Length: 496
Image (cartoon, rainbow, N blue to C red; front, side, top):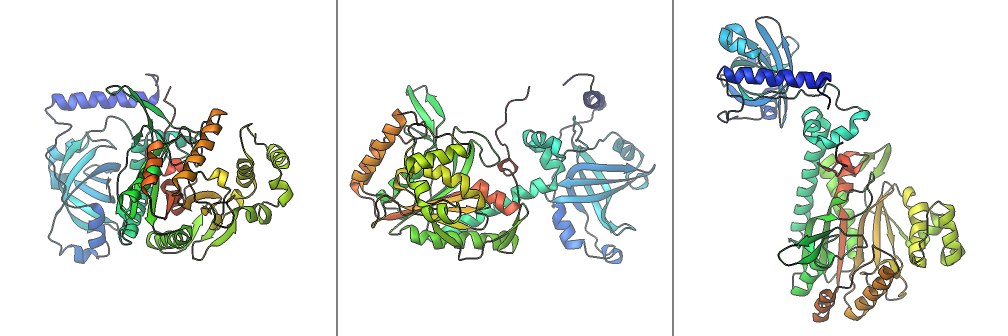
């Protein structure tokens, strides 16, 4: 930032003021003040009382907050302070505080954090206000808050300086409060159904559990390359082998892929696995989890998302993968079952088909282009081709498809679930096919994981498992258009 910009001049003046205050013996960053109550609690308890009733409240309140606005009228000053729970107006008078203390008020700036002690009253405009009996500086702000921080032109600044975004935009704070509530609800939902929360490695010798390009790192002491996990799936299923029958993990995953409104290289997933179940059991659990979550968070199962009303009331629509290509994608069997024709259609729709991509992968691209954007209301799409489902159990009647479904809401994938493949012989063959694809240039293909095969050889009970994208779920329930809105610190290019 150039030194002669208006903003830098303001910062320079604040630094000068701070140095002068310190020369006067003022501690700009003390750690002696202790707040006793949140602003929200004060407002909840006393916000509805009339002035005559407030006069009978003998209690004084000790709160702390950041100065968000200040208006001085000579010997009296109004200000608004904000803590984690909300804002309250404060009233400071020279006759109450004395000359020295009131003059000290003039040294404060918007953005400073102060501690105040005061009693409640209501102004003529009926605003609950603290009549300040005493106050002190808690933290000096050396940088001014932006005046208009929430315009579209400042979107990147909001993500890059999330700390400022949280200060000045109540809607941002509410998104992340909601995110916390969602996670608490999910844990409670699964705990009540007998699931155990576990933790599995984030650094892995062999990345697995999804088709994605991993991030690489290196362990100096052991002299070995490691990968940041793309999914915890294969470790969670090892736990099923070990005898835990219901496990889940709310995990951070890392995938070395592009960034978009739906993708961040670091993201949060819920994965849960249950023995003696198949994918049919997960249809019901998923409907129940999403619909009851919406009811808990929003008080309704009919939610608003980016101009759409989405009804999460069960039961949801179900279509097989190939049915969806026909009924929603408008294709015929000849279009999607003939490799040359399917490849030609994908190319016409503006996507490339790589030389190693099989018919199943080309069909999946047709689905992504023609079907997925149209799935606004909840849809389960099931029976995916086996060649694009390397960890899923084959369908008993038709081995070319798997007992797998994906959930789509608002035109995007929200969950992926399947009956687990527990035959080590079939799993080895699937891994071998993936290795061939990797050799042909597919950087997202699975690695061979001999230890996972060994685990299956000990015997994994029949099971079903599911992964749910937490970030996209938060987007849905907070009406957020971009994944960056729901991740506190999304990945951005470094500032110039």
